[in-house]
Length: 322
Ligand SMILES: [Mn+2]
Image (cartoon, rainbow, N blue to C red; front, side, top):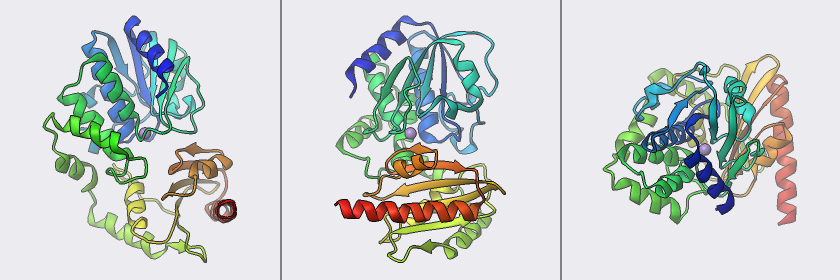
């Protein structure tokens, strides 16, 4: 834990009155959980706070407390502090970026290894599995934990660790979860709200993806290239990856989605050995060692060719070094 930056962040929060809270685009459990938890903490401390996001709240997360207070339009007033959470770079806040300059100070609280240290205070912990786990620490410091906070933090920790199955889970994760569970949370309900949402058409779409999976000759990389990605009120990306992860052999999983004729979204996941942040970084993106992404301005078949051949070279290199 970066004690000096934590201390600076806490001091700044204590001294300041008004806050803008935001997170990365493509909202998911950790971004929303950490934003809402931060909002609740600040309200409990008697501060003024507003959450402003680039994207609309996905339906599956409306169960989170205070989620209806989230704004999608720029606030008119200035702020003492902008709290940017779970966000590797200020440009990842989308349209919120313009409003960040209206704050006297930016506090960057994040766990992406690709973080660009864009804040005035940068509390960045790549070894921690979720931004929510970092906010949990603030809850304890301010002694404000309650059921709403526990629900927000649990949701972020749960989603960012693949339901507590990824390699970023350790004993501290479960110790914290154990404390959150004291607030009478219902993990089975949270799980179903977030994950049991597929319509029959979604499963048929998944079937097409599964039947088109590709592998390198050594079966260490598994990928799918999808020309027509199904837009849902929730994102099927993690569902596809969870199916790919059922495979025994691959270390790396890749999903290519056509954005338009000259733009391809690439999502990368790794099981244990390969650092996919480095791969995404090579192609102008970033994220975590085990989960990252990038958008490349080339047609999908070109993106597929370039990324897969890079991964093959990269993993061969990693093997030789071992
Ligand atoms: Mn996160």
